[in-house]
Amino acid sequence: MRGKMFDVAERGPFRVVAPRGGSDYVGEHASRKAIRAVLSVYGYLAGSSLGSRGAYKLVHGRYGDVVPTRKLYLVLEEASKENPVVQAVWEAARRQWRLYGDGVKTVVLLAYQLYSEGARLVEEHGLRPSTVVEGFTRAYRIHAGTLEELAERTGPIDCPAAARSLAAGSQEPEVLAGLLCGALERYRARPCRARLSEAVAVERVEGGSVYDSSLVEGVVARKRIMQYNAPKHARGPLRVAVVDQKLYVDYRGEGIRFTTSDPGVALELARAASEAVKPLASRLLELGVDLLVNVKGVDPAVEQWLHRHGVIVVRRVDAERARLLALASGARMASSIRDLREEDIGVVDSVEEVNLGGRYYTIFKAGKGCASTILLRGPWFTVDSMHEEVRMALRGLEAYLADPRGVPGGGAPEVEAAERIREAARRAGGKEGLAMEAYADAIEVIPRTLARHAGLNPLDAVAELRSLHARGHWAAGVDEGRLEVAEDTRARRVVDLYTVRASAVAAGVALAVSLLRVSGIAVHRRGAELRRIREG
Image (cartoon, rainbow, N blue to C red):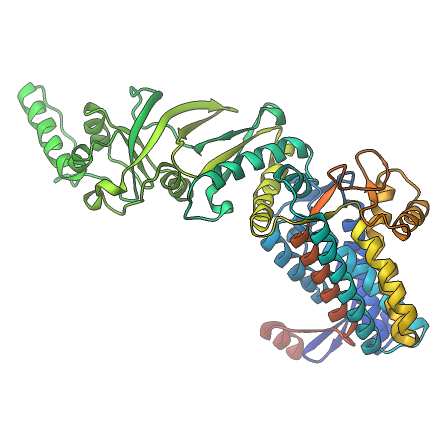
């Protein structure tokens, strides 16, 4: 991107980044054009993929994988961070994504529109950036107050509506919403010592259809049962021990090969191996363990000895899956078999080895704990994008657990806030009022974009929404599902989570205000690069 859009001026130990052709400009004007050039790219990406009918982007990952997605965060994650403006956008998006797993497009789109309106006021009307910032700050307070008021009016929303809002960017939001709500219901019904995103795993399996996805009340591990002649499906209740220990026998003379035709010698060797195994594994029999799950490896001699005593062994299980199994079964992970106590043993209802999509998985079903696994099925280009979307939607549901209030969707809060900001701007007057008017125009980009994606005329749709809000229909917004403007989006279950929307608006405004204060961009060189320039 830098090679096409930016020139880099050499200024001693610094690089000054300006748009191509920026040598005609100096100072603040050049920096504003550079900032606007970056924001215009990511603003377009955010706007074109906003809502349930937004366009997909094909992301070429760092490891060579190609993923179609509507999630702007994944696009930003793979982008080069050399430009400081890109880095600023990335930091704002990353914080929003890590907290709530949603709202990144709103952050970037609002930041782009607000910065563009603010820069226009500075360049065309001669306002100082500090004056624009003051007007934007006052308008934001009205915007935030409007969101709070609409959240109080809307009240708590149910899980399907919240999950559909968080999964709106996926290919099958209804399917994913059902799986997410099933996991949340199981999490709520049982006491849990972990957060929702830590108690629910997401496993992807290539092949089949998205509609074959399911919720497993337990854990799915990409491992096989170690003993080839052990039962591949055992019903419980089974007592399970989860350990993180290398279970290898210390053989004397290891590495020496010999053969014998004497049955007595062979029997003696087998007896010696059994005696060496007992100190390692006898504790499991004392506790009545039926299933051993180990994060590390297991010696074949230990496996055979346990099999003879009816213990199923699954080795080298991913540490995260082992932790989840302990959570699901009520067990506690131990660092050594000798340290196992009765309270460390859990219970699973069944264990089964299955072949899914050409790979073997072991499914541990446990109804006792709060942990579960969302098993996603589908083609590779679908299941890869859904995997990340579901993981981040779980973080949004954590916010839903803390505050289940919603706000009307379809751009309704922005239209309502814009009307109130314009009234306050008329009362304020002057330059500050002009900045507040610009803020109101900028935030209406959300209903305009949603209307465009729904096949409506954006200007007509926004005009109709303004008329409805003026008549008291504060929940009027764009219904992308029915391709029309709705008087009450709540009745059509088009809602957003209040916490996610409020955080996205705050982050977008903060990013725009921070960039409006910028009067120059300087990137400090690394030491090796600076020495090379001085020597050359």
